[in-house]
Image (cartoon, rainbow, N blue to C red):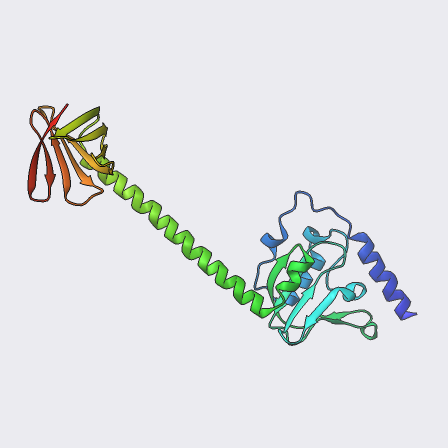
Length: 246
């Protein structure tokens, strides 16, 4: 008689848990990783946030509990909702018994992962898989930090270039020396050059003097700079080569 009474009560509990979760906070926002199995089971059971179709950690849904003795992990779900809880460091798995009037002992363990796919959930039960995923996550974070640092450096260099340059004009020149010709395009605070042999060189700083002469520095090829004015020169290290620029 007691057994029949328990089944009826549990059936009412399960049948009454049919509230929709539309507009409710996400499960992953409410139950945090690292939570104990005890708190997870109780929170899911009591909170209206999770009363989707069936409760969790219940006698009538215990067929949906999986325990891995090697990895000491446990997978729990209610058999209806596509929400899967994986616990780690589990020495005592969840157990329910009609001898205890259907009451469940939650056991121990902490929440490792919440997923919405049974295949993925079973992967997360494996400790080697978890270690691999953590390594990937660490590597992704490193790459993300490097990318952020690169963007910061680019921004700093651009700000330096803009602050160092005094030119706002756009000009184009063909600079000749003997039979050699270099084509130079000045665009505000930067400039580009195509040499006589087709090599492309960039300049990050362009200064304009009061007399209308341009000085190109910050070359992508070390030791190279230009002075373009009434008299023009290509500066190669300590050498100064006169050019005719028009």
